[in-house]
View 1 (tube, rainbow over the protein chains, first blue to last red):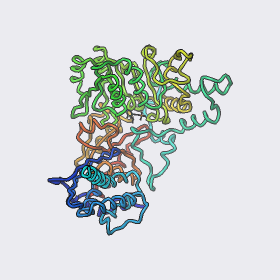
View 2: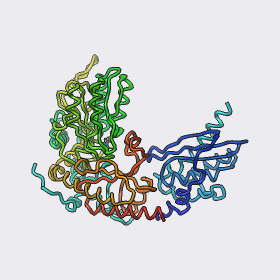
View 3: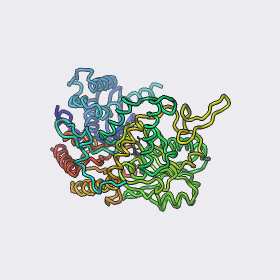
View 4: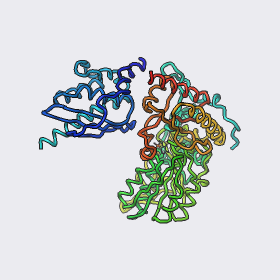
Length: 146
Length: 413
Ligand SMILES: Cc1ncc(COP(=O)(O)O)c(C=O)c1O
């Protein structure tokens, strides 16, 4: 198995030209997550309107896998109903643990990260933004339900 | 100790079985000895012989086997003490360097520190020499102050002097050689300053004892901590060195078997040194292995080890600095530094560097190296780090440089 598996062109492309990078003007919720093992840092802002992800943006610093993953995640969930996004996060997580057949229609470019599952130390990098999104969505629903 | 004047890494490599293996078809180029060193055959054999020939618990049995086990355990201590010129009674075995520092923080710190007292560490400490002090500060009401590190990776000794003069500093805990910057700190000068103001001194020698001649008395420290696995020895054993008088004045850290002379229902008395600080069955095979490692290092000669690594470091600084845009942290003068070399390369995260050079069998570390305050000072989240030891050659540095060039081409493609 070559490293080309891990570093597919599409991943390097998202790394060099991250989509949805930046800050939202009026995010509904913001979270900061980091990966203590390697120092990847991610700031994620999400704008929620009528139960949908109306906007998503990320900033931070990290390896190609973590940054590309944040870009791919943002692209995949932009415009998505919150419940679907949470399901997709779970689907992505299972893919990283090789416990599901990845669904390209839902994952979009993020399906390219499937190969990361073979590199256990890098799985955390790939998961960082997805776990941040889950945290953001749950934090928001917990505070608005009250 | 008459070590050979020059060390031949190619000859020594034959002593390290792991260096014969390949990684993904490429020969192993191990450049992460600052994290843990590889082990020579003599260390593995000594531990194996201990278990196959004399395994028994120490300091208890009257039978021959138990006496032999005790002898070998104590012979290990003797070799380690000799390596650093320490008193056998002031050479305490712990689990690792972290536990040795915790021992001082708890056994000395908790009993001695008062609210408002200051504990001085530095911005370049490993978490092992920060967190124990923070824990103890929380309990005692003492404060932990950080000596700043300048742009060249050196400690601000003026700040230290002013702080010693103006604050009730009770402890100065400082790393001898930084595991990130490589900086060799002037610990003897620091100890002299600290002692002038009545502060105790702990030197974290985890990255110096394996790589250069270190005499405990020359450091001027009250306490010195280091760890077996970074000096060709096994994991599971570390060392605290102190003057026996200092240890005599302290209460034990952990309680249990081995560390008592008498246990009654109304209290207990402590064993003599060093056993007072070695509760429970100690790391016996590990002492045997570490003793063999110390003997091996002494046979090479620590001056020769240092000369070899200084040469490798000078060469690596030269070769790596040719890389376009590279930042090499810490002193650029090879005489002012030990062998860890941390660096970053534009547009390539350290994590990606480590992953990509692994293709050529090259092992380098990427991350914060357990020194997050230093990472903040440097303004980075992570660096890549290459570090050498007796078995590394100049060619290993060339392989690293070539692998870095290839990684860069790959990321840019
Ligand atoms: C400077 C320094 N201090 C302390 C330690 C901790 O050593 P150990 O993990 O064996 O306790 C290390 C190694 O990681 C180190 O480099």
